[in-house]
Image 1 (cartoon, one colour):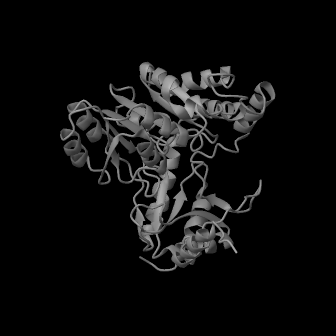
Image 2 (image 1 turned 90 degrees about the vertical axis):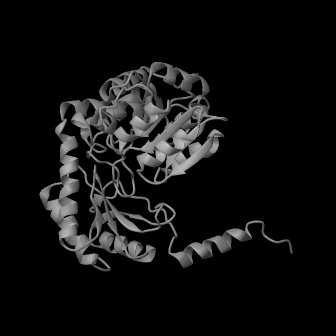
Image 3 (image 1 turned 90 degrees about the horizontal axis):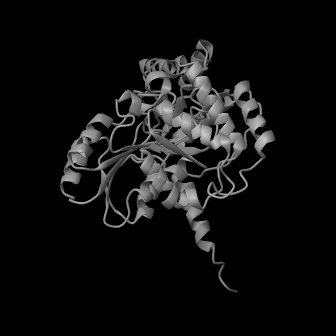
Length: 381
């Protein structure tokens, strides 16, 4: 009998099981009794009536889907309004909306580099940045995490066109990149700086304008940002922000923009309304940071090891992948939904619970979360 051509998948599955790295899809219900500290809904906007109604209204007016790529039929007045208001809110000249934050990073990294260019990439960068580097055909130098000196030295050794790329807030530990130092190194060596502000928008900067606003770099020469609409804005999609000529270049060259169906009108409408709501309620940003600090302080005071949050992610270390998985399951059984990060999602190989510090959490919910995490902890320390 001929061998099954996918026999190798069975062995790969056994290896994942032995390592405690099996992942399982769990469809969530529309309504749940679980307290959610696992999503990226940092400001609690995904279910705000204003936002869901804006999504529904956009779908009723513009249709369920975009119907084509942005360059054919996929652009609507909603997309144009969202781009204008995103750029203005975040302090950039122009913006381009894509179907996801992943697509935005692929677009920016590949379109701004290419053969003969150098990409200097932080070791802790998101997978979408890593994939963008691989697809760019540029030379890629991966430098130690949040190390401006390493960035500077790498740029010094390359005489040609270069791009430094980093997350603004890293999704695993929630720590912020040294953006001012990176920008200085790029200025001194004629390099561009690309910052993925997925976890900074809505949480950092004045009224949630993002990490680049907080660092005084929004709209600065040589600086480009990417972001997602699916975290603080509670919708879906991504965007690239920067000088108008950079955005025009992406429209003409970025494959994940040119050949992809445009963002659905419902998502664009929801994101636009979330942005306007954030303008009306700027205190949401500081509230998310306060909740993160409170969670960190209470958990570490009780003996757990956690990374000090710079934004809205609180990362609590677990002794092993299996222990992290059991811990998350025990939390869930006790009414608390938390994230569980294990290799290969974590670059340092250390498994964690990942907690989202949402701006809409009450003091009672914070206490419930801390009590549950401590009661189900596999070890202390």
